[in-house]
Amino acid sequence: MIEFDDVSFSYGSRPVLKNISFSVRANEKVAVLGGSGEGKTTILKLVLGLLKPDSGRILIRGEDITGKSEDELREFRMKFSIVFQEGALFDSLSVRENVAFCLREYTRMTEQEIEDKVRALLRRVGMEDAIDLMPEELSGGMQRRAALMRSLAAFEPEMFLYDEPTGGLDPVNADLVYQLIAELSNEERGFVMVTHEVRAAMRAAQRFLLLDKGRLIIDGSRENLLQLEVPEVQLSVREWGKCLEL
Image (cartoon, rainbow, N blue to C red; front, side, top):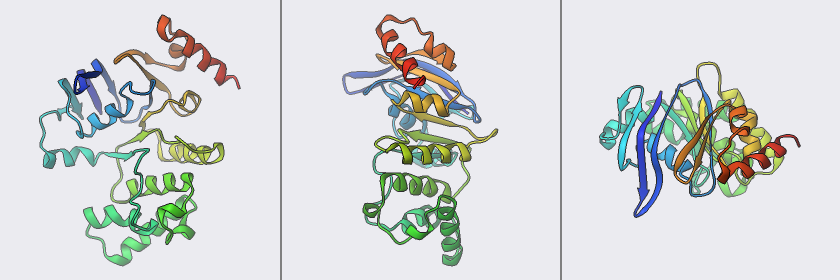
């Protein structure tokens, strides 16, 4: 589904990713871990063609997207449901209008069909009663759930992309979001999640990519992560292991 082939990327003179290579099948549940500024969110933006690599190739379903135009990229972006941590909802639109946005942009549904679809999606996450509220009136967890439903509204994606899906949420709302992530994923449809919350990643994902100083230093299972022997990050991994026992 996704393949990075020797990809490097820099913001100006600051290297972020250095010769990164990996591939992810559509049904895999993958967490990308690393500290602030390690390029986790950059990977998602490269997958969507929002950024272009300095070198290397990015393939979606076997097709190189690095030279595609904006019009050509639309076809590939429709394969993914993406929820970024920042700017999840349009502040000036109600919950109804936020979830309906893609339906109006990408389908020919009637207004009544759109209303029925929006209500069904919000009912799925227990938010139908909030349909007329504005984003500023919602809790962080409700905003995240509404954003997930908006991303699902116009089409059924082949894979989900999550950027810090529970960042800033209290434990109760974080649990609700992870329950939703589990429900939306299945044997055919997985996700790539970027997060610094290791306990959450361990709970949701089955495979882990760890970035350090711009390089991919581990690609493997939970056991691989906890057994990492790179001196610069060994202490952090050991601390993560302690957290998992809490």
